[in-house]
Length: 153
Ligand code: DQA
Image 1 (cartoon, protein in one colour):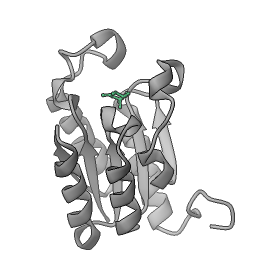
Image 2 (image 1 turned 30 degrees about the vertical axis):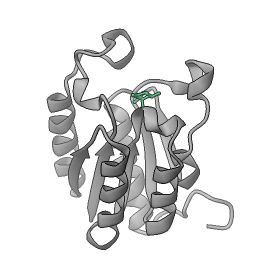
Image 3 (image 1 turned 120 degrees about the horizontal axis):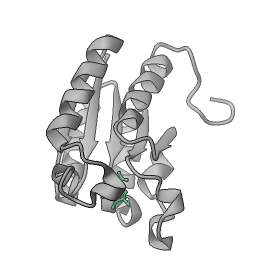
Image 4 (image 1 turned 45 degrees about the horizontal axis):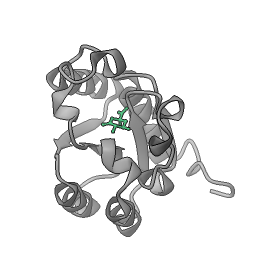
C-alpha cells in the first residue's frame, strides 16, 4: 500500500513558524515521524512539500498512477484553492485531509476547506499524530475494512 503525503506552503517552516500554534517540531521531525509511523503500520508513505499551488496540483495528478491514496495538508491553500479540490476530484484516489492545528477554532477565513470537499476524512488539531491517524484510516479503508466515509459508501 503506497500513500502520498502532501504538505503545502510554509509546512517546511515548522518549528520556526508560530510554535504556539504548530508546535516546536520541525518539518524534518515530521518526515521522521511519518516514516516511523508508516514502518510500524506496514505501509509505504512518500512525502512531498511545495509552497506553490501548481506544484501541489501536479503532484496530485502524478499520484493517480503511482499511489493508492493521498494524505494532504494543503496549508493556506486549504481555504482558497479550487484547483487543488479539482485535482483531487480528477484523480479520484481516496484522500484524507490533515491539519496540525484545530482550524475549526481559528479565524473565520479558515472555516472553509475546499480540498476537504474531496476528502473522505479530516483530522485536525492533533499535531503530527493527525498524519498517523490518516495513515491508519486509509490503510483500513484500502484494506476494505471500511467504506468511503460517505453514506452508502
Ligand atoms: C494548517 C492550517 C492552515 O489554516 C494554515 O494556513 C497552515 C497550516 C494546519 O496544519 O494547521 O499553513 O493547514
